[in-house]
Amino acid sequence: MNVLETKNLQKIYGKQDNIVKAVNNIDLTVKEKEFVAIVGTSGSGKSTLLHLLGGLDKPTDGKVYIENKDIYSMKKEQLAIFRRRKIGFVFQFFNLVPVLNAYENITLPTELDGKKVDKQYVDDLMNTLNIYSRKEHLPSALSGGQQQRVAIARALASKPSIILADEPTGNLDSRTSEEVLGLLKLSVKKYHQTLVMITHDDYIAQMADRIIRIEDGKITEGGR
Ligand code: ADP
Ligand code: ADP
Image (cartoon, rainbow, N blue to C red; front, side):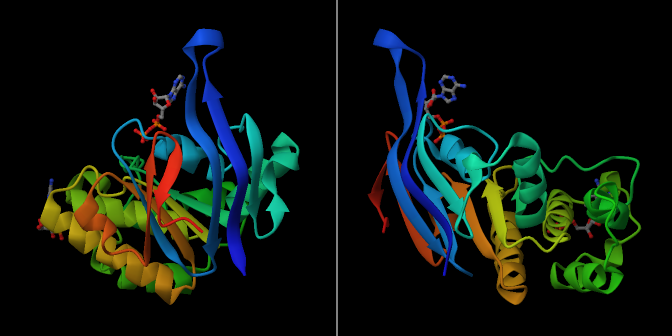
């Protein structure tokens, strides 16, 4: 099954003689449980594309389907609920709540959603990401790599089908980047999730099952 699909996806910024086709007619399919890296230089359209895939922006034209659902045909509220249920986001900056410990940071979105936390699953997740021993530590007592692993556990806690990661290693040194991405990959494979990651780092991208290269808003490699 294609868990994610786009058709003629377009995002145009500006108007008249000053337009930028940030995403220029992208047709993309991502299969269930696939790990895809989207690479490209700065300004190639990676962030714009990821935002469109995650329902965080509105395309100028074209469609995004998640589990065969046309996400931009939904009403705003409906899309927000769908997004919380289906997608987990990981960003370059960890954005942990400083006064909450690791466990509380991980379960916060689920709690705010009024859902029951699956404690056993969260413990398993923390073990998989090798942060179980840091369960009660505040973010300030954790290394950068550990903080990002907490942010990853937070994204996975609601059991989404897709993880969208925007430069998840952008704030880490190269050794830590490799370790964190290795654990992110291990986790998504273990819990049968699909991972779409953007990175400008070709070395990190090598860890993906497939690399999609974009230039000037178009796919130049790895599309299908
Ligand atoms: P990347 O993530 O690969 O660095 P972006 O998606 O951020 O690329 O940007 C793609 C292009 O769209 C760039 O030319 C950028 O300047 C332009 N762009 C991005 N966001 C906006 C915006 N809000 N308004 C106008 N232009 C934008
Ligand atoms: P990792 O590669 O596992 O992310 P580091 O090698 O950066 O971790 O850190 C080693 C240990 O030092 C970690 O177990 C972490 O708990 C501790 N540590 C790192 N940064 C801090 C900090 N700012 N305050 C307290 N302890 C820290």
